Amino acid sequence: MAHTNHNLQDDIQKVLIDERTLQARLQALARQIEADYAGKEDVLLLCVLKGAFIFLADLSRALQIPHQLEFMAISSYGSGTTSSGAVQIMLDLKQDIAGRHVLVVEDIIDSGRTLQYMRRILTARSPATIKIVTLLNKPSRREVDVPVDYIGFDIPDEFVVGYGLDYAQLYRNLPYIAVLKPEVFAGSG
Ligand code: IMP
Ligand code: MG
Image 1 (cartoon, rainbow, N blue to C red):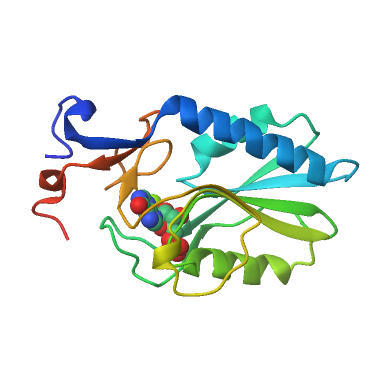
Image 2: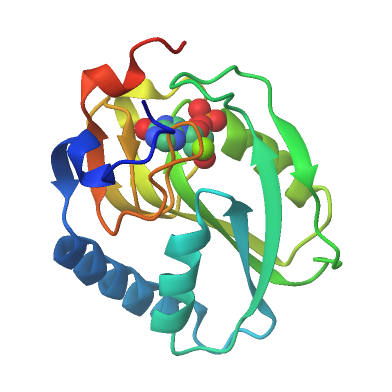
């Protein structure tokens, strides 16, 4: 069903965070980050692909401080809705991050395993500072303790899509955060 040609809206059970609420929170996060990074040189926003790409695009445009952008692709999920636990680098950085102020931009923190892994490999590369901003956080799902510096929204333990987040690589283009109808998952793991 997910791949047949139909209106994506029909697959939505409910909108959890609407577009206006998302954008308002994003501006507030940007003001907080600007204040914390004021006067720092060499700020690097490091986007964790693919899920964080829309959040990165909006956050970067909201920030009134100079910063560079980099991308890494990490995978801990298959096409299902639960983490496999195994984290893998699909695309690594091309630039040296030694001495730079690295702000990792994530879409969502679930078990915390992806972020714990990122933190470990990035810390080994000697950045000046490393902080993490995530749009969404599922505190009830945490399996490992990992510090998170900026959180957009704490959400309940529900699988969500939209604003960059996918189910089976679809729904990333929705401008809000939503929960899918159960029948969308039918027939898949
Ligand atoms: P963690 O390693 O368990 O913290 O998983 C983090 C990654 O799992 C995120 O970067 C997402 O790609 C994916 N993920 C976790 N929860 C959801 C969800 O509700 N919707 C879509 N992707 C999710
Ligand atoms: Mg994903």
